[in-house]
Image (tube, rainbow, N blue to C red):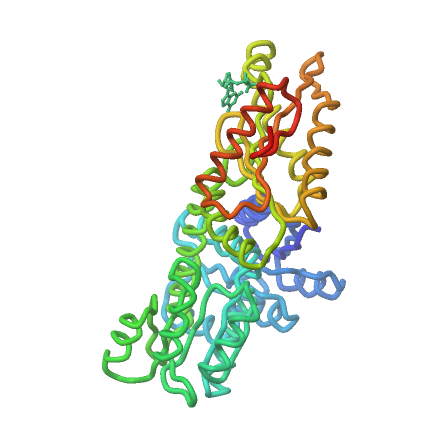
Length: 416
Ligand SMILES: Nc1nc2c(ncn2[C@@H]2O[C@H](COP(=O)(O)OP(=O)(O)OP(=O)(O)O)[C@@H](O)[C@H]2O)c(=O)[nH]1
């Protein structure tokens, strides 16, 4: 269900603009043009995910609407035409998500980013580590305002336990001096298991000189904040580090994914298989590595066109996902796919592959006013202790035999 945004704004033109921005992010929008309307709407009992609040309204010239909205527990972003320091201080003294000076069109682009973050930040876990309850609570409260999922710990040792338990944590904000394990030791421990691509660490210290910031960074932290810090600086650093991580994750995903089928690509398959196969061997887990190749795919392209061929590749990927959930499925390139999967025994693994083969062989893919039929062949190797490259080679040889023997069948490596 769409989240609801309350837009408090006396200018109809600006309210319309904010409404458009919010709708582009999927919000339902309610507009209030005055404080009286805000009170009226809030009495109606509707739930609001967040609000944008114009600082000056005809019946609330001095920011009175801010307190009214915040008192209902609605996170508020203040929009203001005033740029003076007194107004800024007055706004920041309240628990607002942010304030945006309405200087130019950049203000509305920034508002869009803020609203987007409010929606997506809940997927980002942040762990706050500080032995001082008051300091910890202050940081936790700032993060909650921005809708992050927040965890806390009172020292480095407890922090490591929380981190191990919650896989959604993307950032650790740690104080320097703490009993049991201080911030530097914690950062060091974290870096033994989590790379900077996976987890950001921000150090905090009250020390007047810069010695701690340098130590934090040299021990693997990504950034540093000196106490006391103002909320604006805090949010800028948090957001920048989280955005960096998300950008890296996006790039990594793109580098490991086949654009057409959205399956892992060859590189991702090899990386995964190289890690998993030794585990299967040492745990004596039954597994197989299989190559799947579409039969006479060139003919499908030649008969129906390349676009129809692309569609066939996508459908094959769908069938694979449906039949082999939990398996590593990849498109190696062209019309060749790879499967790495575990099972109860060889028979069960074989049956699952054969079910997939059979379903594909009776399926028909509608294309324009025609139906495309297709079959696939498999080469498979079971429970091999060979190196990955050799196993892939064996499975390829078996696939070659399946093709030679008439296609639409499974050929097992090592069997004639
Ligand atoms: N539509 C489409 N075609 C592709 C893509 N990648 C490779 N192909 C085509 O896949 C076809 C593969 O042809 P062949 O290697 O001769 O194999 P085949 O026709 O399936 O014959 P067998 O494998 O022997 O059954 C070629 O025509 C490629 O152009 C793709 O991403 N999309």
